[in-house]
Length: 152
Image (cartoon, rainbow, N blue to C red; front, side, top):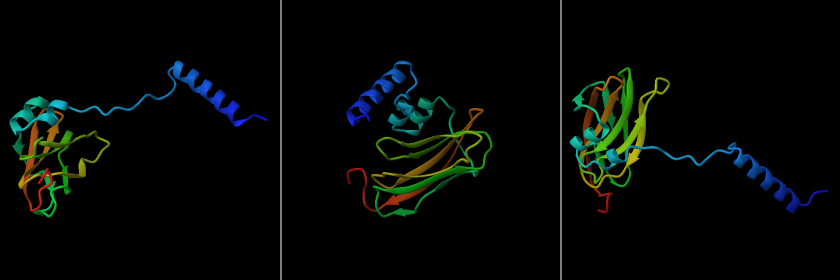
């Protein structure tokens, strides 16, 4: 009969062998556009993503409260009915970092996302759709914050 110590020793040997052959999964790292999340203005955001200036479109929608009671957790959603969308973004105009969320979209994913963001003050909130052909569309909504979330 094997002792626990012997079993652990053998399993560590098997794990080392599998790792040496490259058969163990590596650590997952999320890839994101650092320059886009560092953007302070819409012009900087568009430039960092390498896309054209956005145009307003009714097929892109932004959802959220008219008045957010607590800026630390503001529920926002973005969606579009446009075919051929590549990315959906949520941006808050007066936040220290304008871009709050970036979602990559494929044909197998419905372009409809919800999240919670932190807002320091009342601001315009944007849903931005980047299309496969390089066109960019947006929708905006003003959200008023009664209690600041970003250090307020």
